[in-house]
Length: 394
Image 1 (cartoon, rainbow, N blue to C red):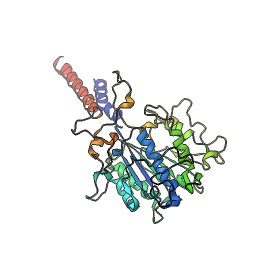
Image 2 (cartoon, helix red, strand yellow):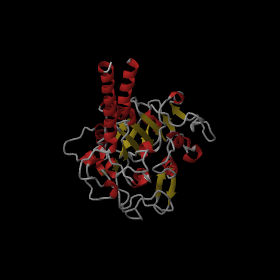
Image 3 (cartoon, rainbow, N blue to C red):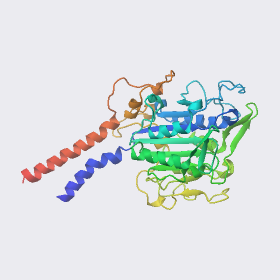
Image 4 (cartoon, helix red, strand yellow):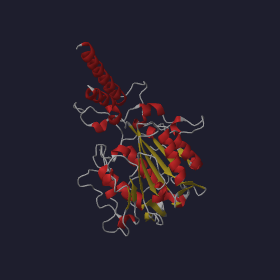
């Protein structure tokens, strides 16, 4: 009898494990300004293009950008930002939505964005309207040092500031999992003080090491992208909306001789395995050719004991779509994410309107939000039937 009761309560609670992740958000921050920091703006815009391509709509992307490169008087290619000397792809284009621009890119605004402590005058389009079911990709690029990142050469945010902000997010139920990526000098120090669960982190360089630019464009006159971000974006080009590549595959792609610095990974706060237990892609992480020091992977020892689904790249970079696997749904890549988080954010304040930011006019619950309710209802009906059978039928 006790076994049956426990089994039914377990069935009622399965929806928590199955439905924890229902929406993805991205916070992309270029903390630099001025023409000579062109590459940092290209870094952020490259990430912006990637998360949009993989399915995260503008309504769930917060972009913080000085935005003083595209229309700078020194820009030979006015209104454009390129990340390679061939200038094949304009990262700025005509469909970009910058949420925090120019002098709005401050430490205070960044921390308020994370914690949700906004003044009432701040529009919903500038708020991170996440919940306990949200996966968040946080990307930072700019000039930094040991446990700090400079904001526009005027102020600094410390690793402790970010750690405390993320802990407040955890206490307030503002995320399910976070992927934290930093491209700056001594980047790995920026995640060294993290202490909240559910956070996976990576950085471009170890403490005491610089992060380098990738290439100069002599027509533009400055470096156009940083090396670490360039190779991450290059790898991401092989990822599509239905990709099964894992986070371990991404980290294993780090090529130190090409990047010029030693990227690090921290996974001890992250509950899920980064890749398959058998033939793990990161089995030799940091020990291959070109690594001058053993690769910094905090959490290597605990990886083998982790249970659950492998962390996919699209768990953070892609849109979330609820699909019934028992039905012939066809090509799922055609569907756009639709969940309560999108409806909560409503329309962006920018006049630019695209199909990815179009929202339904009615607040109908998504299939993802109905699924846990139906599972719980079925479990309690079974529980009621068991009581009738045991106490009335006997």
